[in-house]
Amino acid sequence: MKIFISGASGFVGGTVARRLLDAGCSVRGLVRDAGKAEQLKALGIEPVLGSLEDSDLLVREARSADGVINAADSDHLPAIEALVEGLRGSDKPLLHTSGSSVIGDDARGNRLSENVFDDDTPFVVEAAKQPRRDIELGVLNAANEGIRAIVLCPSNIYGSGTGLNAHSVQIPLLVDQARETGVVRIVGQGVNRWSNVHIEDVAELYLLALHKAPAGAFYFIENGEASFAEIGGAIARRLKLGPVQSWTAEEAAEHWGKRQAHYTFGSNSRVRAKRARKELGWAPRHTSALSWIAEEMPL
Image (tube, rainbow, N blue to C red):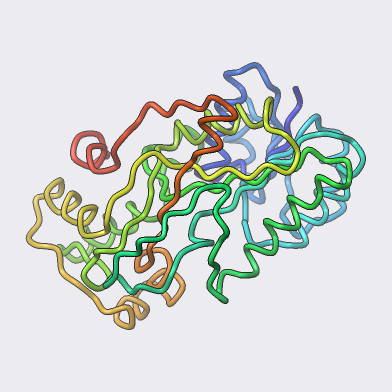
């Protein structure tokens, strides 16, 4: 199976690409940097030099592939439109990567939400996240245009990637902050909770979805959850630092930007991957981000 992946040099895209290669697929990967293109080639991924702005290129690649995985920018509408154009009427799979912050609230770290969403739960979407939800719905609607269109929506991903980029977003950013300042910081009280999932389990679900998922399917990806106070405490213990300290959302925004302060670290994003387990037989092997931080996180 010939697969075209955008974001092939990234954390998710790179790890998924390596898993597909192990499964016997051939992979062409979109990459902007010539140096990274050579690195991809060394991993067995055929590089395609370009960017998400190259609509004509995306259309051509989609048409010539047996399937497409968008693992680049979840919010880049023109790229999605180009991939849909290239696949229209083909019945080929299009896997689009979103993220569970789409149902994140604005708790600012100070409130635990009782809302837990599964694949069939009516979503509650903040205005700031509605454009991402609109893109998800557009991908799902492409199932009516002869495309096996699927949305994959991972929660907080942890673990070490196997592609060019080994690092995810949330936990590594907290670790980097702690190393620079000697203090682990969280937003507010950190009672807000996120579901989480190991990158290797994420890649396994992509492989299953590529072969088995029906058109129009939406899958959350998670296996467990933790509060940011728990995550921060685990990082502090692993790095042998003092107590976790709090920023207000406004203080955090000065360092991380408003979007990350309010949604990446200050929100609740609690989801359940009911459909992936039941429909695809997905059986994640890794169970705890806190255990990974304590025992496996690279220092």
